[in-house]
Amino acid sequence: METIRTSTPSRTLDIKDNLSKCSQGERVIKLLSGEDLPLEMHKTTIVKKLNLMPIDERVAAIGRAGSNTFLLKSNEVFLDMLTDSGTNAMSDKQQASMFIADDAYSGSESFYRLEAILQKVFRKKFFWPAHQGRACEHILSRLLVKPGDVIPTNYHFTTTRAHIKLQGGTMIEIFTDDAMQVKSTNPFKGNIDIGKLEQAFKDFSGKIPFVRLEAGTNLIGGQPISLENIRQTAEICKANGVPLMMDASLLQDNLFFIKTREASCRDKTILEICNEVASHIDIIYFSARKFGAARGGGICLDDPMLADKIKELIPLFEGFITYGGMSSREMEAIAVGIDETMDFDNISQGPQFIKFMVDELENAGVPVVTPAGGLGVHLDARAFLPHVPPEQLQAASLSAALYIVSGARGMERGTGSEDRNPDGTECIANLELIRLAMPRRVFTMSQIKFVIDRIIWLWKNKELVGGLKWRNEPKIMRFFFGELEPIGDWQERLAKKFKKDGGA
Ligand code: F0G
Image 1: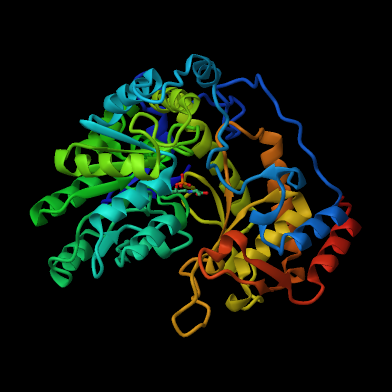
Image 2: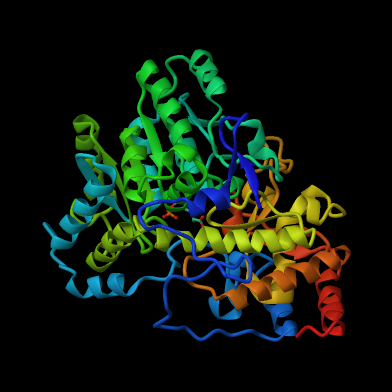
């Protein structure tokens, strides 16, 4: 049984025990054989045919893509674990809702249905729609960030940091010591360090326009923040007279973890937890490509002055204030998707599949981020490929190698996702991860077992994986379009050994 620490170091918490004690009819059904296997609480009604190209074609495809999984075509991929952004499976009710979408340019009924659901979960007076998460970041940064400003956050996200930088601001990351430990038992590795936050207000007095908390912290491995940490952060913000902002894109998993890992929340419903989280936050924005399992975004807040300013920018950059760049059909699907996010059965599938995969990989000795978080499984490329120098982009190399041996694509989340240092040298990332996202309700257990099998083979043959060098390096967000090439012929040699071992 897994025993992990809560945010209060002296207390211990047993996750499984806590799960089984969850109230409100929310329970975890177990196999009587004792095997620990997640059970899907949905059935598949629409399917999409997959294609697993032969390995020689995969080697050619990753070569054409400059060893960058972003540049693969979707039909060259067997299991697409690049991201969960806009790729979660939709429910029958979401699909059905799209048929009654009201395509009015202004005053669309679909908008008001979405607004009503957001009112229910966040209880804020105003909701402004935007076409996706980074559009919200663009508008909020434009209005709130000026040159020289400093924005404390538990951890940055790429698009957030880019928008804050564009306005002349700087993000400072205030994480706890555990956050950068790949292996940890801290259930809330996403927490902001409260002591350091108080210090930041002293060090950067008058320069902090807001504090940003990211739910389900993406770049440190989908790690959650606790309700207690949110509450304490809000207190500090209040004392210093600055608003607290939450990036709620990954709130779905975070709500699951608050319920299952924070003893004080065990008997609360997901909606009650969500309401309580939101009550501590002044400005909430989200990517509905994640939160709401469709495609869109929006900003929720109470402050009428700021709301007025946002209202002016939405029609300029996004679209009229009752669609904000989203199609009415997507607004309907998001509304239902957010309502379904309040259902424990619905939101359990992702974290449980992720935990299954993490446990299996850990048992095989593969270096993987623990505890299992939300969003996906994160391999530690630094420990996986210690023989590849960091400048040769370990995470990108591992990601290309995994595609070759499995047809599954993950995402580099390491040095390749950083900008270079001002002196032109590589900025070696704090964590060198490859993310295997778990789009919700998309994969079957046998597909997950297949990926685990290929990762374990790769782990046993890791010395065959070599490094990469840039052949085309964009200046901004180079991880999206940058092209790399293998140093030497390791990709061909890897494929040869794989075939020799019976792979295809
Ligand atoms: N904030 C977080 C925490 C995110 O994970 C993302 C997107 C965004 C903001 C931006 O939202 O894509 O709708 O503009 N994450 C995607 C990912 C891209 O793959 O993790 P967006």
